[in-house]
Structure formats: C-alpha cells, structure tokens
Image 1 (spheres, rainbow, N blue to C red):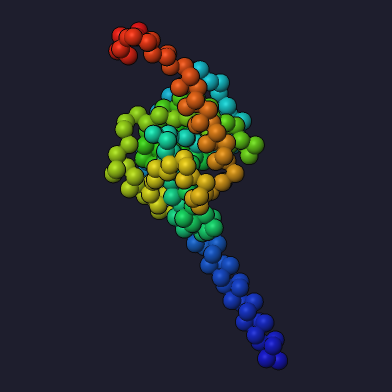
Image 2: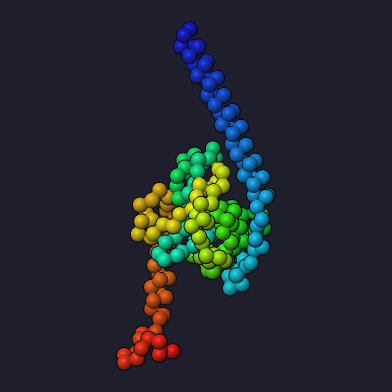
Length: 206
C-alpha cells in the first residue's frame, strides 16, 4: 500500500513538473516573439556577388577582428537548458522565403544589436546552415559587448582563435572548419601582398 502511494505521488509530481515546464516554455517563446517584433530590423542589403540561397534553413555571421571572432554567450532557457553558458556564432532560422544572406544579417542584429554587411560565404554546413563572413557597419565597442537579450543572449565575447577549441561551444563540430577558413584566408591575403623591392623603401613601392 505504501509503495502504491509513493508511486502515485511520484507520478503526480512528474506530471505537475512536466506541465509547469511546458507552461514556462510557452511564456519564454511568447516573450521572444514579442521582443523580435519590437526590434528595428535593418533593411537587408544582398551582396550581388553571391546567389540567393533560400533553401538553407538557417544562417549566421562570422565576424573576425585581429585573430579573434565574435561569439554570443547563451543564457539559461527552458527550450535549450543544456546550452547554458555555451558560446555560439550569432545566427538563427529563416523566415519562409527569406534569403540566407538576410537571415544571417537579421539574426546577427537580433542577437548582438550590431548591423552587418555580408562579405562572402564561409561554408554551407550539412545541417542546412550557411555561415557568412560579415563586416560590422560600425566599429564594435566595449559597450556593444554588454548586449543582453533575455532567454537568448547573455553578452558578447571576442575569443582568440588559439583559445577557441578550449571553450564551451554550441555546435562545436563547426569550429574546426571555421578556424581553417580564417587561416586559409589570412595565408592567401599574405601571399597576395607584393614583396618589397630591395633598395627601395616600402612607401616607394606602388
């Protein structure tokens, strides 16, 4: 009899916790949707050198500065509790019919408050996520790094490339490809620079 009562109370408690969790999840989602409506989204400026990619589900922005990349810190959420404290590339899911470039720019603005321009494609990942190289319209300041959005962003961080893989990362499997892309671009840029001419000052080389 006692074991029956314990089982009964345990079941009732589990059901109550489940209902409470779903209720909090609904409140969280409604809050996020209401906040997105209030945000002034910049007009999407497509980079004409890249084709429109509507069929990719999500997209994000890779913002690089002096061997560092800009990441957002994830807060606790009922939708993804195990993402708490993880660092992630700003990005998200497309609205139906939205080009991947516009998804990346919009989601980055929603998650960082930073307006960006699309520069180039970094990679199309096999989870239907497109990562773009993006350039901030204005220099990023220390105050910008304090940006927070309840249930979505708990601040921004510049993370050095050589420290990146030691961090607690969301979608960590994407980052080796990101690091390789940055290094390849840096090597290509260095190789493209003209070698100084012996006997002349650097400023005299056209």
